[in-house]
Each structure stands twice: as structure tokens, then as C-alpha cells.
Image 1 (cartoon, rainbow, N blue to C red):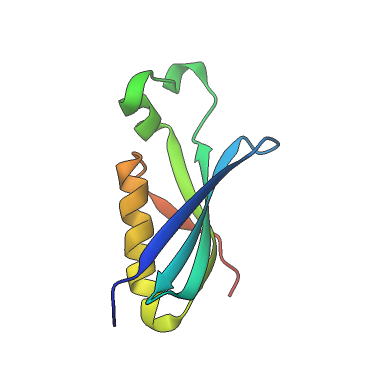
Image 2: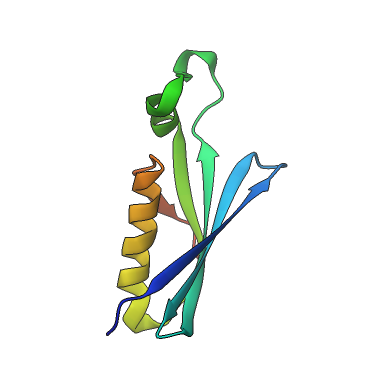
Length: 99
């Protein structure tokens, strides 16, 4: 299995106050799948709000809404998504997938 490439397309859902990251995966110039992750603010209470990057990390979480990747590339795709989320300060990824 060769290395996969990941393209990230961010967007914003105003109604849900969520940032959505759409991921596209390619291997050898062939599309092998896509995924969608929504990031939300954990709480709106004043007592839990923090400023700066550490506050962002503590007050955000991510939910995997869509995962449509060829089976042999799923592990690599999830690993890349997880790494991306860690880079932006989100360490927890929940799943909201219907089997």
C-alpha cells in the first residue's frame, strides 16, 4: 500500500457554530475516499472560557460525520485526520456514523 495524500477543505456552518473540515484522500493520483469532521465548542459558559491557544484546545471537540474510504486506506486516512486535528489543538475525535 502506498502513501496517501490528504486535501483539507474547511467551511463554516453558521446555524451550528461549527467548523467543518472535508478531507479528500488520493493514492497514486486516484481518489480513494473522503471524510467530514465537524468541530464544535464544548460549552458556552463564561466560567470555562479561556483565551489563547490553550483555551481553544480545552474548549473544542471534533465529531467524525462521514467516512467513505476504501478499506485498505481507512487506517492511514484516520491517522492523517487525527494528526491534523492534533496540529490544530483538538485531541478527541468522536464518531457519529450510521453503520
